[in-house]
Image (spheres, rainbow, N blue to C red):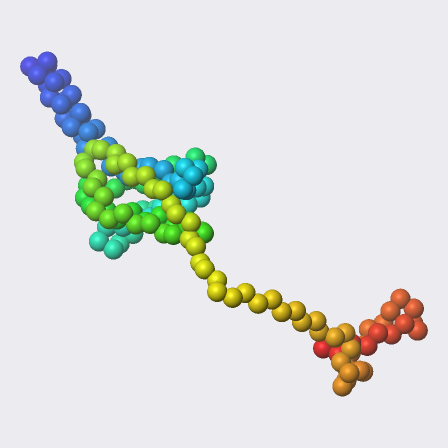
Length: 146
């Protein structure tokens, strides 16, 4: 009887432990040259609702947990790169789902680029006494119009 009770407790404990393992989505984020993208934002959505999000580490790795089993959309954002979303990522019970990303640089074409310089004059010719500043000596007075 005691032996049966021990086995029963062992089976119940192992079932509870197995169901307590959190499901997760993990992977890495890299650029076109396979270099890791540090501090990329990884967000996980289910049905349009944000379920979790993390920032990639120094090696471009991320882990989003705990997640319930189901289908998720994974969005990755990084400044200067096109955002990337992978839909219907399956998270199975008790498993780790791996999803890696290779990001592409965001390119914007310019048709024309004009550089103009403007320098505000120190003294406004129309109002020379509108602003004055005292210099080091009492006789040094500077006038400037703003």
